[in-house]
Length: 91
Image (cartoon, rainbow, N blue to C red; front, top):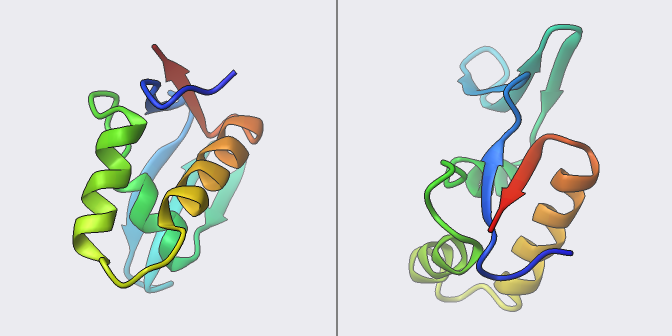
């Protein structure tokens, strides 16, 4: 179960990077690539294995104060990323 104190970290089989040709962030893995939309890339750019979920949400709320329900969107994305095994959570 995900908690707000969870520290998300990228699974070791993935490499997160900006893909100039695609003009977006991607997740590279041995068999392929996941092209991320803007918000997903923005969230994953903050997943460093050190920040917890509260820290990530706070950074994004400060960057985008006009965004409504940002916390819910971040939690939903992190939950999906956990299900996809892109990240793991450490408490």
